[in-house]
Length: 176
Image (cartoon, rainbow, N blue to C red; front, side):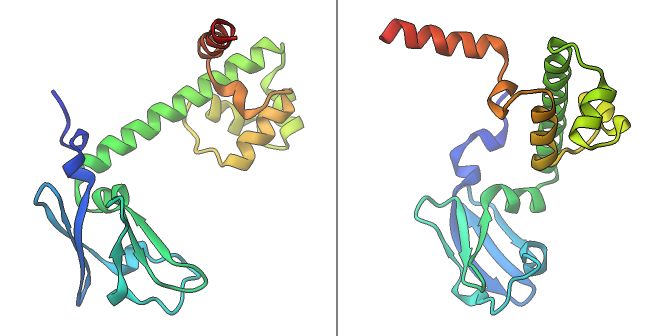
């Protein structure tokens, strides 16, 4: 069965307006939702002009004039805040991605014949954290991910599974 978020009308915004307690957004599928301004305000934003909020030409983002830069509110942020089912879906998806990245890091580490302790020391992280990362039970920042990859002599491109790399290289050979 298809999910409601697989329909473009679920993610396309039609209108945005300001209400006393937040932004009111209408989606192309007819859903009317409201979010509080505080839930989408970045920490350093000032001079926020909520009444000048507008939807981007692609209908996927709300732009709110502010300093030091405009606030961009992407459709999935609005849906995550207002649709518990979609929020659960996104959380499950994130967990699966964490498991995938962790499993791939473990695979790369083993290909180099390295222990978790060796990689953790080289990356300057706790060995227990590397174990949790490899098991998909730890949120990893981009900078930590790059450190772990560098400690093993890999780059972010190496996170792609070997089959994908071979398919891409086969395609290059076929077209040259």
